[in-house]
Image (cartoon, rainbow, N blue to C red; front, side, top):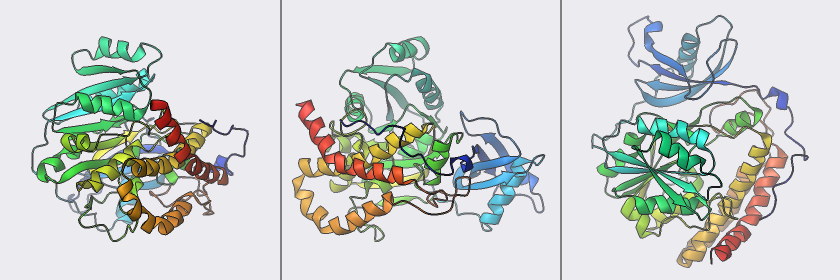
Length: 432
């Protein structure tokens, strides 16, 4: 595995403009009393695990309507002002007509196993487990897979604080996909949900993520909304300014029987379907396609791509994939510039590693991929191009890219893309 370039290379310009941003969770009443702005605010809290809100600086807020996530707003709260009223006013200005509340299936969510793979991050894991055990889902259990641990910290955490509420599994072979497969093998439920140890799950997360399986027997996978828990470092602000992990606030159905017209590369645009920190599968469907490819994912030479591989395999097997913003987790982004560099390289490597995995394991898909390859290469260049948009000092709405994406990160993504097939081959060879 090649080493990630050192921090001595050029870092992003104008880093002083990447101010820390408070992250808030604002709940509004969509039908407040006439001429009563204050009554429209049901609650305002910091994002889970984030710092307290403060006036006199930028605030990035999730806006809910009676608990339903509908949008994000970004504004500066003047010193001495009421943050709730300022944010509510900014939301109404941005959305004069409130976004429509899409219907939620009335079906009871099915019994579910929640799998959390972790490695040497017991401090973060405890925070994630506390949020998972507080879910309003009526029937679930939590499984922690300790992946190639170097110390007994995770095992001790479970034994000391969660012995009666969490199942502990040890997986000696390193790799996120291998750890996930270990958890899926232990699932005894119709649905298996997977998340990471650096998230805090909204209390309705699991119910919202799994209800679509009961409503539609053709649904094989559901993904959900991921928002930042804190934006306190330049690396976190820059990542979120370029979209972070969020896929928007509009529910989306991906059906192989009716390919989306706006995605000519479908189903190979797996990155648009969701992310591994917030996904669930019909257990039988995931097992039928062989689970996750163990030669992909963090902890292997491939560096990533395990979730993307699973999404494509579910779709190519004929199942539907749904994205629902009602299933929300708050993600604690990596904090340092080196973390961001590693992430950029890993994204590029994971993208081409998962494509290599799909073709190696399912060569019958090669003609479809080749037919879409020219547009695929253009798409790959578009997502890694250096962006010249002027910096604004704060993250914009998802995907608006108000900060210039540094050339160093663009180069790292492309180097990762070139390396991905090599990394996958090394992982496959090593597993043998």
